[in-house]
Length: 143
Image (cartoon, rainbow, N blue to C red; front, side, top):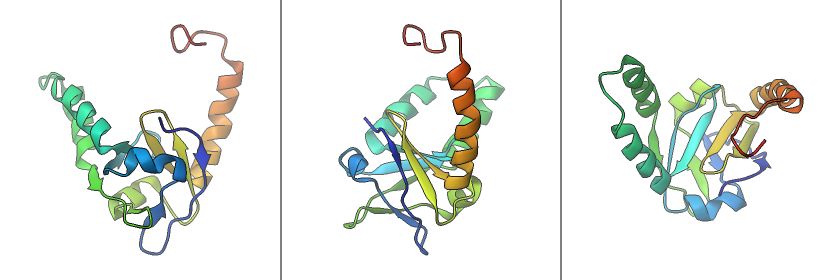
C-alpha cells in the first residue's frame, strides 16, 4: 500500500527519486499516466495490468468510456526505476501536470500521485476545508 506525503525534487533530466516507502511496490516496474486534477498517477506494473483488464470490460459503445480510455491510456508510459531508484517522468506528463523542481508525491493506496508542490498546496487547502466540513457519508461504512 502506498501512503504518506513526500517532497522529492525533479532533477534537470526529468527524474525523481522514488520515496523509500514506495520502492518495494514499484521496483518491478511502474506505469505513469495523466491523473485527474492535473497530477501524474503512478501504478505498479501489476496494479496497472489489473486496472487495464477492468478497463477492457467497459462498453466501447459508450462515448464517455472511449473518451476516458483515450485520455487515460494515451498518456501512459511504462518505466523502470534505475539503480539509484530514480524514474524519469516523460516530458508530456511533466507538461500536463506543470511539474518543475519542487514536487509533492502522495500515496493513495494502490497508486501514487505526483503533483507540482504549488498545485498540491492549492488543491489541499480547498479539499481539506470540504473534508473537515463534510457531514454526510462519502465512502459507505467509513465516514
